[in-house]
Image (cartoon, rainbow, N blue to C red; front, side, top):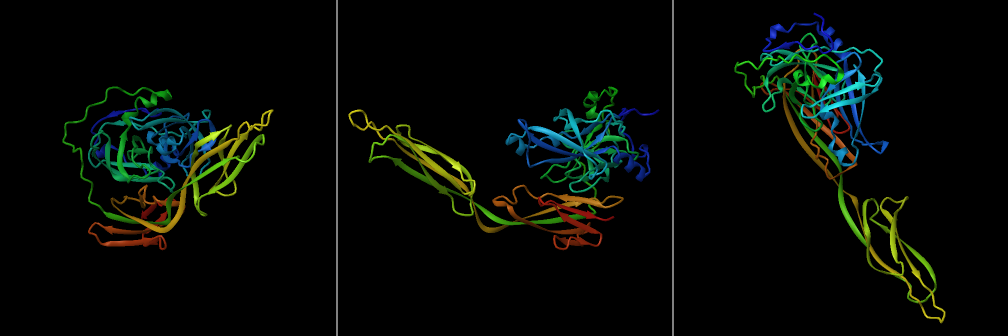
Length: 451
């Protein structure tokens, strides 16, 4: 019987042999033509061209001929951007290839508790290649599966993996392969390319994880696309003794990455400026403004100005400041007051004055400092093609350094299962026999191990 878009066939406890073997190249091409590279940016709701510098990258896949897309919900959350007021989401995508023509997508419905989101490609008049799916409540241990997506800095990849049991705590699936940042939201399929799950793992700044959201969790989510309802007669988990914390397979390779970042220390400093301004020698009538330059040391950057703190004032005495357009470490302080002149019989009606202080706070360059971090990960090599392992440095590794004056370096050591070193690389010598590596601008290291 021909499947309709994401038509759901109910199955439970499916053994490995029941999932047919498709031609690897044909399956990969079919999935690629319906898989979407996603870029999620966060903008100021009051000014659409004001965009947060931080963006999220991930993967989605088309589930209806009119461009409905299923992906992971955590792609649409960025706490740093939200804290700065950038809380409107803008999504663009590219089908199949990271360098393909991009297009906008609309966010239809978000299900953060399920970590699922429904999008729709902006051009609804077109017909798109889409993937079909079926619900598998719990595959047999060691069932062969395929994960697809766009790891950070890479084009579309196919990652073979094995089902290992239920993930502890939330009833998702544990699998044998690492899903890294950029693959979140990608499809997990059987060997024919039929979707049975959604990649959960791969959060920026967090080590790669091995978790899949079963497609059954999307049964309510896809109703918004007017697809057929899912069959409610799902079977319960079998009584077989599956472990909730499966032991991973014996590691074939251990990859160690030593991160190093060197930069100029960022030192906090502050300085107070106080002025007492007035007219005590005459009774001239009129307004007087005096200007004073207030600067932090040369080479520092002014971050904040506290003030004015008015100590005393009379006759309209007031103070204000303006940033110096030519010097980023300076402001101009203004002190103004009014003299009332003399009355008709020559008596002084009162002079003005203003006494106020300011505190300038900022950052100044200090000495050169270096921070380092060692990360290690056991990796099961892919059955076909290279294995990609992505290491993300700790978010605070460059803390205390001027962001524009940092330089990253790394070294990589790869060992086989018995601990024998099979390859070493550095940022200056990034490649060796069967091994390649590179480092992104944010310090992320991507290691590729040939089969």
